[in-house]
Amino acid sequence: MKRLTLLAALLAASACATAASGIRAEAYGVTQSGQPVQKVTLENARGMRLAYIDYGATLIQAQVAGRNVILSLPDLAAFERTRGRYGAIIGRYAGRIANARYTLDGKTVQLVPNNRGMAIHGDPAPYDKRVWRREDFNEAESLGSIYRLHSPDGDQNFPGAMDISVTYRLLRNSDEFRIEYEARTSAPTVHNLTNHVYFNLAGAAANTLEGHRFRIAADRYLETDAMRIPSGAMLDVAGTPFDFRQAASVHDRLPSVPGGYDHSLVFSKPDGAYAPVATVWGGGLRMEVSTSEPSVQLYTVNGFNGGETGSEGVAYQRYGAFAFETQHLPDSPNHANFPGTALYPGQVYRSRTSFSFAAD
Image (cartoon, rainbow, N blue to C red; front, side):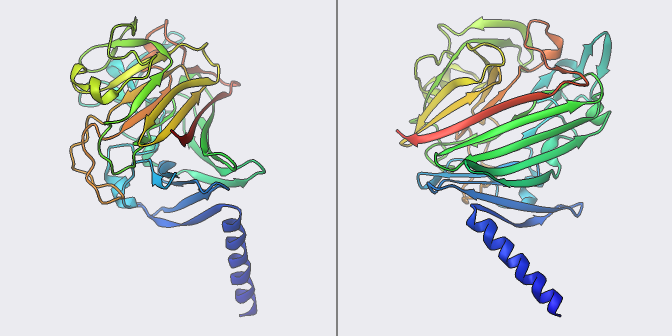
C-alpha cells in the first residue's frame, strides 16, 4: 500500500512539474483497434497554446490572441471517420502521383490507385490514420514533442523502410510554432511530407475567408489538368488569380478560380533555403510563414459542405478556411524538371516550416 501511495505521489508530482513547464498530457481516447491516444497541450510565457494528439500526429489547436485559429474535430471517433486530414501529417507522399506510378533509377514502382486512377496522400493506409510514438521535450527557448513513425519496406507499395520524425515546437517568448521533419530510408524511394492544417485567422468557427489577405512570394504555379495532375509546365503567375506577390484577397478571387483554390505555387527563393514565403492577414491577426520547402499547396477547403461539425459546434462550410501545405510538388517523381523527392540510404531528409502570429 505504501508503495502504491508513493507511486501515486510521484506520478502526481511529475504531472504537476510537467504542467508547470508548459506541457500537459492527458488521455484523449482509444482507437477502434484499441490503441490509446493522448492529447498534449503546450503553453508559452505569452499565453499562446498549441495542442495536438498522437493519432495522425494531428494539430488540433493554436490559441493566439484569445482565439483558436485551427479547425478541428470534437473527438477521436470523428478523426477516425474523417477523410478531411485536419491538422495531420501526410505521407508517404503528399499530393497526387499520376497513374499511381513512377520510375526511379530505371525501376518502375506501382502504387495503389484510387477510384480516379491516381495515388494521393498515401491512401489507402495514410500516415494520418496511424498512432505515432511521442517524446515530449522542455528546453530553454522552446517546448514541444517529437513524433516518430516507422514505415516498413513496401508500406503503401513504396520501397524502403522509412524512419520519420516530426517535431512540434512552440517558442517560449513569441507567438510562433514550428514543424520540423526528418526522414531516413533503407532503400531508394520517394517521399513528400507535409501537415494538412486548416486555418482561419478570424477564428476556427468563422466559416468565411472574407477579410483575409494573402501575400505569397511565388512567381510560378503548376499547370494541371481537370484532376489536378501536373502537365510539367510551371507558368508565370503574372496576370492570373495565382499572383499574390502583392497582398490580395483569396475570397474576392474565388469566382475566377473554378472549384476554388487547390493549386501549387512555386516559391521564388532558392531550393532548400529556409526563408519567409508568405504573410496572411485576417481578423486583426497577421500570420507569417517561413519554410525550407520549394512550394505550397494553397487549398480553400473546396470539399467542405457542412457535413462535419467542428470542435466549436459549428458545421464547416466550403471556402470557410484555407490550408497552406508547404511541401514538394505533386507528381514530382514523374517530372525531371521539378525539385527532386528521391531519398537514398545514408541520406537524411530535413525540412522545417514556421508559423508566427502577431496583431495586425
